[in-house]
Image (cartoon, rainbow, N blue to C red; front, side):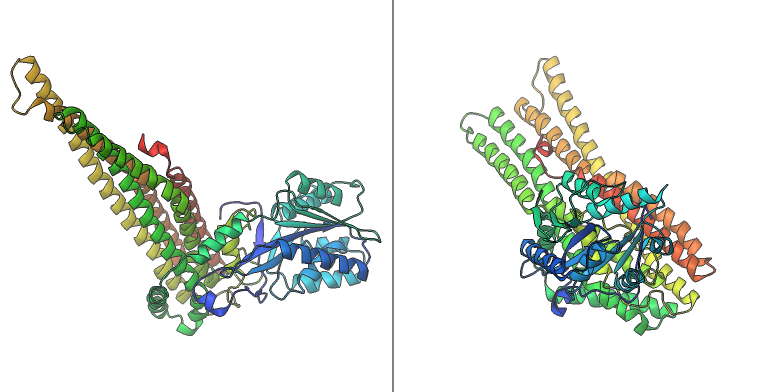
Length: 554
């Protein structure tokens, strides 16, 4: 996987309630989870008055949590589960049955528990960590203090809201509560500070406020209207393809079914919406470049034709206004951004089922998307929301040969075939448009030559001069418009990228066929996923540069 510095572990059998109804799950909708971070002192009292204050703060956070009919909201808590504050707040959040727990660990568990002062706190830690949906082992640090600083920074970076149980005094060393609170304030993370001594006053510092943009993105995704009949048909078709591959490989259908039922509604919904917005993007782009060319043609006709065609100036204005209107409409609909985001989500879902079967999802193994990235990345947090609800059991119970055949046929070979076909299609489109653009430019040179030669020999050209000038204007304008489409679609770059990816996966395929044990199969599956995610991210970065703007028309 692309290196992130973190190892995200998952604990088997700790699936949180996802929040939405069963019907919503069948339509592939995703709940929104607001993540609450916690920091504080280890020696806070287990006082009912303090617990009541924590509950009051959680009630305030509940009021700040966005929600909608299509997107139910639920909670997650990010807590290292150190004794005292971490355990108190995590326990209160987890009173909500739909809540999930992520536990970032500054040290290996055995080493970490040496810092717990009482057997009771150790027992509480062990009980709570069993409920964790994600356990994130942070990379080693040069010292214990730096390890605690690192885990505090992780909590701040990955939280939508932070609760601090703090006495208001300066930190006694690196990684102290005061230091983490200062970091949260500097980054304007919404902060609820509960004074950690009796009285337990609360200060609320909302900073930039509870983030609404990721919720709005998730809600927009959930509110997209799709045909239930078409979704179900696509689910059945994909289920049939995977079922045939499983039967061929020797994997019992009943073993595959839990994974298929889990991921397919999400994969199909994301794929359908990505396809919809890709069509919109291509249509808007083609229309805008065509309208720009028509505006140039209308201006040329108006200038070169006999009097009486001044109204063509209005036609030019009309074409430009429509082009500008299309840009505004595309930006208002967020066509480009939604296409890129929905495609990113679909590709992550596509990886999930194969990685689950290969072993990810069993106890103490890496996640297919190894970080829950910062709160403004709605696709990562949505993927992790679905990943946490994966089927129990982890690795396929079928024979090693059966598992390898299925992963090879249903996943790696399918992706190789896709990349080869996509490379060929993009190459053909690049050659076609390049040929047309070349022909138009050659035509421009010919027309200009005919017109120029006619003037040199002092007699009329076989075609009236006005028509030659008109063609000399509109032919290169047409070439420029087609060149704009070429540049926007990145056909040549995509063809090279896809062909390279297919060749890379062929090497991974050979490694998979030769894998001697399940651990190696799991490692190779991670390698395949890493290669695919790397290619996807490169493609997304390239295509983000082609959002609709006025520069597309100039």
